[in-house]
Image 1 (cartoon, rainbow, N blue to C red):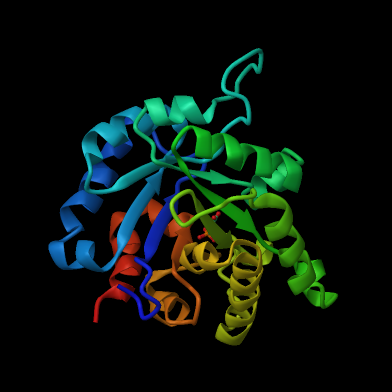
Image 2: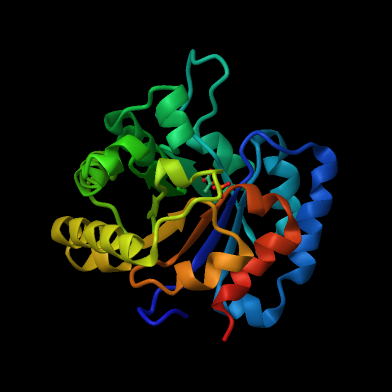
Length: 253
Ligand code: PEP
């Protein structure tokens, strides 16, 4: 348990990586998830939807499994899309929403992400709502303004610790090896906490806020030690069991 009393969450976003054989990586993660680690940190793996069923069956209740996106409707004529209910049916308990790659490549708006988060809640999933500024926005001194408006617009009314996690992922830090310094992470996480408590009162104090963007075993302890950082959303390093577990071990004494 972290100093703020929230159980940390280390979540792996596999993006569009992994085939049936990748179940061996999950097996490695499961076998390295020792009792001391499990008592310190919750683990979540979000593979491509094609692997969800196999992963949830394998992971059982030890490690949570989640989707990387969900449509805002329950069903209908939306070729190629997957609903939150379908993810839940495959054993998912979480879903990543509004990742910067979806905001950029699929032009997802805050309103759309908010609708998806509401759909996720109705399906019984916890939504990991992603926010974060681009390099240009940071350089223009607009990082706090951008993150605040994304949090306000993407997190639905009535959010609670049970159905919502927020992930701060500066776009310029994703997959680049660059990370903000601890003071910048602290500033943005404090802002997000403020927005959540202003809007949701007591419930806002329990919503976990993850940091994401080039988290590695080497920098995890420093990043996870920042105030109001309640875990990590990990891309590249989550594809390698030893690295993913190495990040989670930042939570061991
Ligand atoms: C991500 O895409 O959510 C992410 C944090 O990627 P990476 O860890 O590779 O920077």
